[in-house]
Image (cartoon, rainbow, N blue to C red; front, side):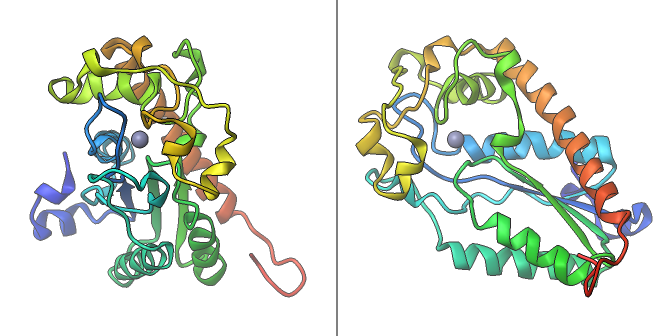
Length: 243
Ligand SMILES: [Zn+2]
């Protein structure tokens, strides 16, 4: 059950301690995938993880930080500092209403501000609040995909074929593996590395692989969150701090 479809009374009865915040992005995904791709994956994965963990699920946030996709209308972002502050405020509102744990599921690979965000929150508020997060790099899909990729690739295309097949234009899918290192997205937009805005081999995608990836991702995220919360709960003071 997606808790955001429930009434506040029902949520109070359930009284969850864990909130799940899925974070997507609106950005170009080549010629064949919709701009909602990361948001659609965040929505689906968030639902599955929240169900497994009996958690309060927030609706997936549609916009984060994807400035590296500039160059085509359809990509929409906010400043990293705005994202930090927005997430900080949202998580504080959860804390003030009694949530003890927050799990952030980020399905866009470029939200680097999540690192200091999570670090700052835990250093300031643990044990009253614990925050864990995962990114696409946390999920090792290589046991399922034939190829490696980064964006609009076999992995993402397979997942959208499973979640929203009516939005995929497989006839427009183009494979492209840039020579440029990923870190060069700090120096120029993705279109300098890949003229089609693709990083990988989407033509290898199938819906069946997509469903398997979603199952694996759910399992991985649940495990990673449990491990991180356990790690943060078993802490002794070292020197002047308990972080
Ligand atoms: Zn994506």
